[in-house]
Image (cartoon, rainbow, N blue to C red):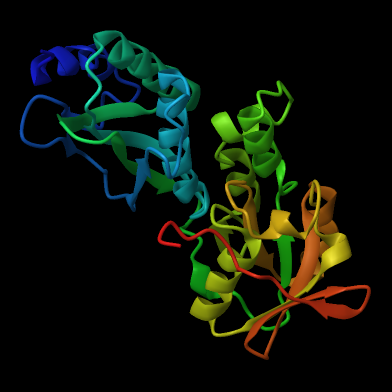
Length: 297
């Protein structure tokens, strides 16, 4: 029978190295970690990934680890911030120690790619479930969802729908360039840094553009009008509601349109006074059966 200590040993080497030695006053091994923020704003978020909902049981442990962490990290990018530390709570009933060793390898790959530290975590027995706490700092200042202003332009930072296509290809055992967009999504930290000087609001597109932009509108007490033809989608209108893209949607003053477009970002609409979200295709309004991803539906 595998024990808690057996599992924890698979992860000990991850907390023995550090990218932020000066900030970690106390790492893993006590009841909690102690981090010196040096007077800076600390940005925190937590995400849960559950088997059968956020990932498939047949995925490689390395990919499960990577995906669980990067989807959590993306929330920091959506706040105009970069990551520094994470902690992981793992629930699992898997009995093979080799699975945990491979899962640990996936964590290590992610820590190294984004130069972040694992400062602690916990394990318990049950259906496979991964909870990731992420901590970071703003590039300039936190970019909130409630800052969109009337007349602002609406942008997205990249093409939508690649993860949806990747999931479909992976399920059908088709080795395509899009599989990695599902298996190993990338939080957009460089793009978050690029927009941090001028974005008035921002959100990461995890639940679908329609739902996530709707959250900006609700919190900013404004509406939005989008031009369907201007939205960079891979396939069709379902790319706007599937989610899992992890690009950024942001607003900015309209007089900066040319400057922002020259940086490779896509102008897709504008903020309007009338509440709600309007999408026009060939001048006519289009509707959606659902606005986006909801784990309870």
